[in-house]
Amino acid sequence: MLYRLFNLCTYYFWLANQRIEGREGYERILYVSLATFVLVFALECVVFWKLLKKANRDRED
Image (tube, rainbow, N blue to C red; front, side, top):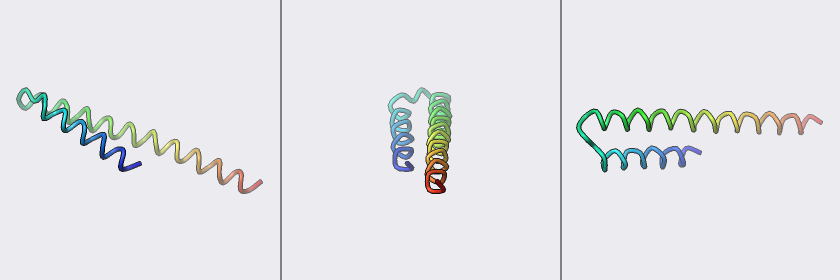
């Protein structure tokens, strides 16, 4: 999970280096990469939490 997030952020920073148009372009890509990092991390945490709850419920039965 963390490996995929690291790859995603690395890709965005690579993209930022390709398209830098001054400081504003770099900051925009930085904010987009941070927002994507948080979004993907939250989504994977929700999926993991639901799978964990399901496993606990199945174990109790």
